[in-house]
Image (tube, rainbow, N blue to C red):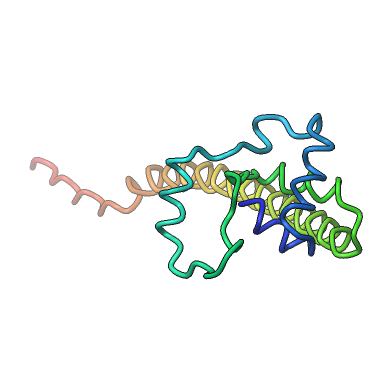
Length: 147
């Protein structure tokens, strides 16, 4: 997410958001955030349909982009009530995702067990059929005794 989007999410101005991040730079490794290049920003801006008009409405500096981990860490360096609420929301969402994954793992394990049991039953049924098939053949007619 762009720094401006996160700032809006956390309810602070972009400059305040970026200042807080810079004051806590040791918390943001390269896999948490990075700054876009001029070419990337130009390409990104060309994809934004509505640009604000007027003096001072455009960025002076290249924006920062945050990964999921960086977005959460950014919430930890802000102390606004909204930032606290967003952090709580994120924690609850991750807990729900973890629980959902655990449920899926449990279902997958149960399906594998069922598949194993069915495969064993298929083998047993095939053995029963092989045993019964000779019994289903009509008996051969008795041979006539030579007179």
